[in-house]
Image (tube, rainbow, N blue to C red):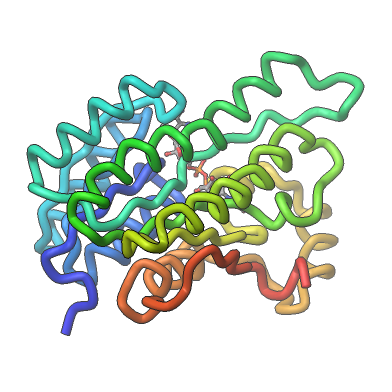
Length: 247
Ligand code: NAI
């Protein structure tokens, strides 16, 4: 039996990488998916693939940092699909730089796209989930939010912030039958990590107990557990998907 039959999911940053893998995994369990991304062309390709797999899917172009646009798209999704059962806040960016050279713009941009976005979507979707008396939210943080990383002051702050939002919203929403959890991927093979040089890559793998980088599907499987009935008594939790890296 499909785990997510008749359910509707919103996946942000669903056009490619981890977000696309999550959208595909949820769809494989029967969920209809709203693919939200700033890149409409790629979001459409993902939605097309999902429809090919037999579920309903729609692509929407939204900047997740823009509160009004987020509110509007959630209204549109509810109009189109009738409900929202699952929200995965996955969209994220990096603008790396060491403390002394990191610009104010790059601080503001990363905090807006990676952290404010989670507030924007959680707020907009929670209203609907409260009405429905159920829901599950997963926020994509990072091991860097747990450990810190030189050159990623802005990114690690945003990802640590995501864990704070996760725990506070989990406490606020638990009595409404809405669960909120976070996943912390380690190094996953996507466009975000493709820039890594071979030498750095080998050094990195050396520090990962599992001795390999992760795949987007590894993260998607953890998300599926958290949003489905398999995780029905789990809330406010942060699940590392990192081959043991941050242990
Ligand atoms: P990616 O760069 O392949 O995909 C990110 C997606 O988010 C893209 O489709 C992009 O267009 C979209 N996006 C970016 N800014 C947006 C905005 N303002 N509004 C709407 N959509 C926007 O990245 P990847 O690797 O798939 O990362 C997904 C999430 O996982 C991110 O939050 C990232 O921080 C997190 N993560 C990734 C890790 C990795 O090793 N790849 C490790 C830990 C966390």
